[in-house]
Length: 185
Ligand SMILES: Cc1ncc(COP(=O)(O)O)c(C=O)c1O
Image (cartoon, rainbow, N blue to C red; front, side, top):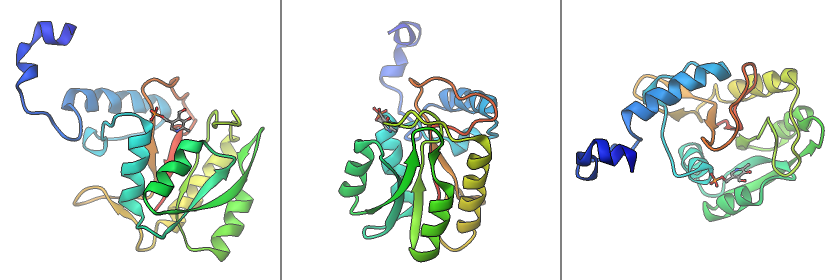
């Protein structure tokens, strides 16, 4: 309402489908705190994390593909996978250290996994936090897997193997920590 009082034209101006440029620039600046160097063009503003997961999974997977998820994981993620016709492959997660990177490594050797959805910090429902070394291993693993032909093209010149989905309502990620959700294609 305050923004509308200052600029009534906001009601009639066309909207940007990726989100308001000033908001995307502000998010890019905030992402620096979490160690992420992003340009505003790499950011898409969504209506919450569920839509972000939908967009991210649609970018990297087709119906019938297998997606690795933490077990247990947030029930809403399983609903998203079902609605997109994707198959969930459970990877064990511990209440203390979250996703087992060793189990993921093993699963990658025997399954064609198109993407991994992980919540490294304060996982739902376990509240686990992955040790920084495990997060680094997970990122390296996803980057190695994404080096093939399954990368999501996010602009004409760049490809992405890590897609982070973060909620403005959630606490800020601390430096050195990866953001709440990530996928690799
Ligand atoms: C891991 C995880 N992903 C997604 C969501 C849903 O987020 P949103 O309400 O922003 O769609 C939640 C909500 O608790 C969550 O814990």
